[in-house]
Image (cartoon, rainbow, N blue to C red; front, side, top):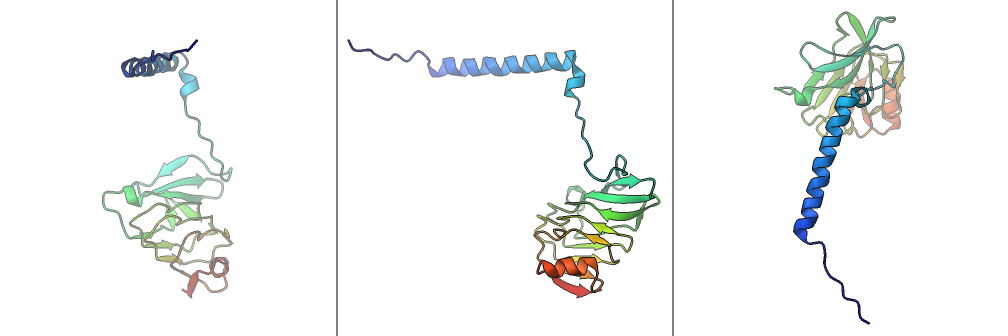
Length: 185
């Protein structure tokens, strides 16, 4: 006895089944969002230093930062240069924002910026986290005017330009260890 295979599912039937499933899932999703909206709220937790508050933006929209009211300081967490109407090739981080001294450059703060060629950090910077210019292909120069106390060993990850900083400081030593060209400021 020989069994024959018959194709019971044709392409239009498969298409209709997929369409039915998609429409059904959209309907179920809408129903759930209306029935239990609290389950659909996004609750992002900040994993950085606990003393820093909510996320803020500078008036011009260039920098995203957090404030530490106890220390009266600010931490730059992102730069929106590539999303600005007129992106700049040189970014100068301000000494203070809204009266708060900028003391920390958070990890990946200037990443994925296709226009950025140069970053200048003020004397107020005390800490530089990892990969601050990672995946910014045109970056050639990082100027660190002060002498930060803490510089992550991966601060200059994927950076192939020149770091200008105070000789024998933390930034100088990290750049030298990574084989990055360093020049005294």
